[in-house]
Amino acid sequence: MKREDDQQLWDLLGQAKPRQLSPFFARNVVRRIRERPDRFAWVRSWLSPRRFVPAAGVAIAVIATILAVHQPAGPNQVDSPPDVIVKIDPQDYDVVADLDELLATDESNLWDDDTQTL
Image 1 (tube, rainbow, N blue to C red):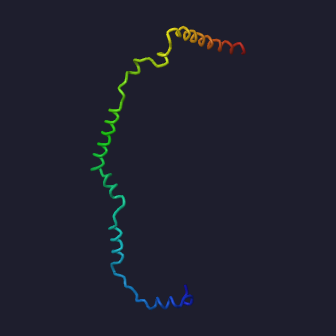
Image 2: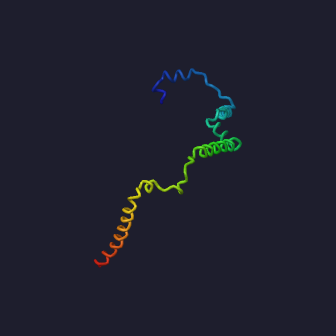
Image 3: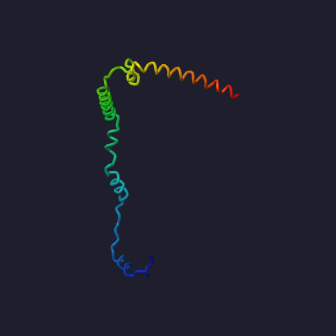
C-alpha cells in the first residue's frame, strides 16, 4: 500500500508511539509455548512401563477368567454320534447301505464309460 492510497491511515500510524520490544521477547515466547499443557501427557503417563505392565496383567487376567467361566461344560463331542446319525431310524439302515452300494457301483461305471468312448 502506498502512502497516497490512504493518507489518513498513514497520518494515524505516524501519531502512534512506537513500542519497544523487551530484549528477552523471544525467550519469553518460547517459555510460554513450553508451559502449555501437553494434550497427550496422560496417554504417555499410562504407556510408561511402570503403569502399563500391571494394567496389562490385570486385563489379561480378567479376559482369561471370563473365557474360563463361559466355556460350556457339555458332553464330549467325540463320544456322542452326530445328530444326522441319531435321527436315522433302524429301518432306514438298509436303505442307506443300498445307497452306499449304488454310489460305489456308479463311480466304477463312470470310469468304464469313459474308456469306451476312447
